[in-house]
Amino acid sequence: MIEKETRCYSGEVRAEQRDAEPTQIIGYGSVFNSRSEPMWGFREIIKPGAFDDVLNDDVRGLFNHDPNFILGRSSAKTLSLSVDEHGLRYDITAPDTQTIRDLVIAPMLRGDINQSSFGFRVAHDGDHWYEDDEGIVIREITKFSRLFDVSPVTYPAYQDADSGVRSMKAWQEARESGALQKAINQKMARERLLQLLNI
Image (cartoon, rainbow, N blue to C red):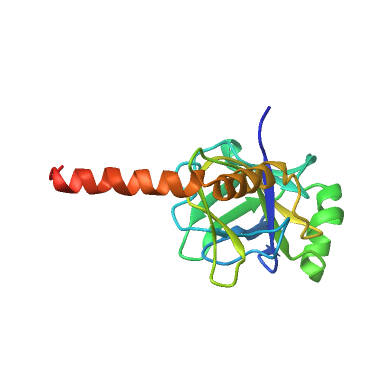
């Protein structure tokens, strides 16, 4: 079973129309080094470099993550992805259909839809959990293994959270059982041994 999570960001997408050219949907699926809103007992921070291994995935541009409303696709060259200092940027050449114009483009031009989201899978060992000084649990994502889609969305809902919640619970159990501290101590001991051996 594919573990897929989605996340949403506000004020990160817009539609641009130019005479005699297809409408472009431009947005950020993700922003770097910014704490998410609280969700299921934790907050997330996505670090620069997290998307490095997935930029060449066959990514879809969907409306509200709905595969019935496909806006573009990277393999068809109707969706392009890039990363800058702000985050994961996407540019979709929207299909020129009445349905997409009515359902997506017109509301975006009016400002009714201004949020963006992306569907992903975190790589094995691609996240790090900790508590900050205020006791807030943070999930820091450093590497994705799959990027499924980028989507303009109507609501900033955090969907399909099971994988993230399970990961947080595993971290909490390891911390409470002492396994987390034991693993940290073992790692520090290995690093010290390597330093002593000059390896």
